[in-house]
Image 1 (cartoon, rainbow, N blue to C red):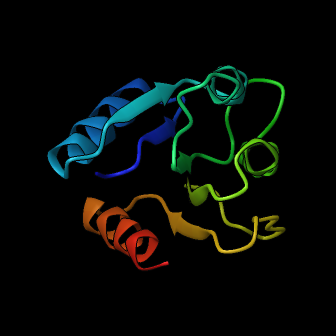
Image 2: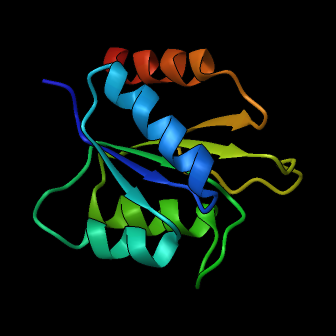
Length: 118
């Protein structure tokens, strides 16, 4: 069984398109508009195995901080960052992957395959 994906993206159209693509690959997907909503989801019993997050978004923290907090709650969480902004001062959690927008969904699919190999 594939792990649940928590997708954090503030752009509604991109969030829905990515969710649809993830579900086409067989992943159950929970969506959040920002880090605050994502942290609420991470505080529930249904823990995702994968976090796909934008870096710059509204709310109390960015994607870098969200991933660090998420890893505190779920130490085995696989993290994929997706952002249109350069990672000049990256702060990734260990073992994460960074994809630059615009991206092809195949890049996300390839990153998800790496999760299956780890």
